[in-house]
Image (spheres, rainbow, N blue to C red):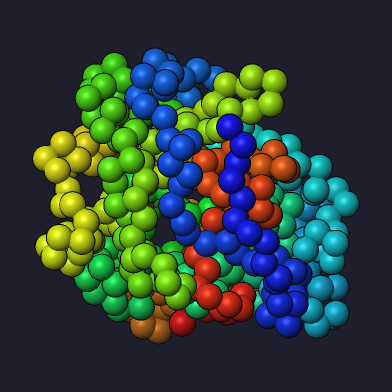
Amino acid sequence: MALTQQPPTTIPLDIFPDGLKTTGQHPPLYEHIHPFDRFPKEITGPTVWKPEDYREHPEKWTHRFTPEEVEELSTAADAFLANKIPLTGISKTNFPLPTLSTRLHTLREDLLNGKGFILFKGLPVHAWGNHKSAVAYMGLGTYLGYFVSQNSRGHVLGHVKDLGEDPTQIDSVRIYRTNARQFFHADDSDIVGLLCIHRAREGGESDLVSSHHVYNTLARERPDVLKTLTEPIWYFDRKGETSKGEEEWIRTSVVYLEREGAGGAEPRVYTKWDPYYVRSLTRFSSTGLIPPLSAAQTEALEVLEATCNRHALHMILEVGDIQFLANSHVLHARTAYVDHAPPTPRRHLMRLWLATPESEGGWRLPFWDSNEKKRGGIQVDDQPPVAPLDAE
């Protein structure tokens, strides 16, 4: 079945200098949502992994930048800064990495179609400072995908930092702006990157899980739960980050299939999930605008979280570490944390959301924008992209 496209629109170049606009959040194409009996009984291949496959073998998922690679990044960042190009205009063209690009090409393939994660170590963030570090980080990211906006303010360089907001106000507060635990979830992008600038005094550690291994576990142990997750009965909150005329929620499934590919390629299983965005809709369900969570849905989200915790790979991000992971088949979580007392800086991670369009090897998603370069993300009206160097 052909992919239905949105009507083309003119992109104002004075707002979006590269001519590309984040497409944002929207419902799936419901004709591409399939019943549970169409899903595989078991997923096989490199996207399925267990924590014991990697826990004692960090060499399989970490790479320490060599002095030559650091120098290459430094040279590219210095040249970019000297040219006074805004961070929102960074691209592979103006951030050349003649040697490191080969490693990044291989990495991109492993992120999209392999285990789905990598941890780089040793970016000299304290020696370089926030500005140069951000340039090097975003430049690195352009070899993996196109950066998309992460919130209604157009942040293409995000900042995971406790700003003192109340994590219990889940209908309006984004949890990454607090020090609360983040349960297993996927972000609204194909790839997410996190660069550690400062660590917390305690906590704030990272957990990853293969959602394909979780799928197989549920298929064996709780097929009823898995079936519930594949049904388009789930409402996701948009927390007010909407363009004019858009609904405040999206109805979708949690686990769904890719669209069928050319040549009969088997559709893969994609997971799109964040429990905070499902639990926060009582302001609408209490007034009858959408259905409340059923008992089966409540059990499903609890079983999903427990299963993820059972099969999670735990890792700690040190200062100068960069974690990249694929949201298509990896879910991630974060433990709660406590910051150092001032004047020691608070925990601070720079975040990238990267899009990998279908036409460039990305997954065949059941959304109208699957072929768009900057698919996904969060875009409110014509909010321009911005890249602040700290949280705001």
